[in-house]
Image 1 (cartoon, protein in one colour):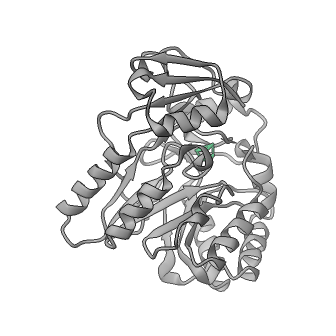
Image 2 (cartoon, rainbow, N blue to C red; image 1 turned 90 degrees about the horizontal axis):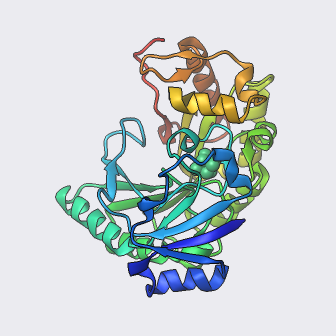
Length: 337
Ligand code: SF4
């Protein structure tokens, strides 16, 4: 999968860098700062299929970002931390295709500094629960067999019961995770779509069934699990497809075990939408009309979004998801298109 490894010079003796080098055995280039090269010239997104470089770097600047409203369950502060840029998978709706200038992956190595910042933010909120989400700019489990950072974040949660970490993923790479003890405040959340849609648009990801199996295995080992039905995409027999997904989850006793289930209907910024049209002209994403919405994002019209969201919400409750575990993601009830 990888073309070459590009490492910031000052990290060359770092044990996690050496471990990655040892595992991958790739031609390696050293440089002072990863962003002297990374994203400096446009590399088309689909080049990730046959030429992907892996950068190992130090995350500088902002290590945590306050998450936008409706990012997580309401009423508590939510932050995301940035452990990597870009992803080995290729979901057709992925916003990364219009966000960065390159699909090359950056893995940040300075987790201790990120965790220090998490501790500072947590202390600032003194005694309140604070959420820290991984997986905003990359999948949070897909490369954990290489990157070796899970243990550090787990230790942070062990030390700080009021901190909650969410690892968002479409991966089934749970081996490193299952070496850790389950914690109340260490949640693994899986993004899920109905089987047929997922197989058409979640390219290179584990199948929907494989993700459910990984979820069930984590649940059986007493890990806290959650799910995101996001993006929900319209297709013929949309209701039947979500019913089947929820039935499958219920059969695996997943629906009642969910810490939360977020629902979000597909949406794009203008730039990402343009990339999706260019990269995936035949995608089922284009089979239902979208319009420019209240926040300039491209979405289905408001009545349709509300109908889809409420349909899936009712189905989820009927299949055993606790109503208080449901939240609507990135949607403004009060707004109309
Ligand atoms: S798993 Fe997430 S980050 Fe990776 S390609 Fe899919 S949507 Fe993008």
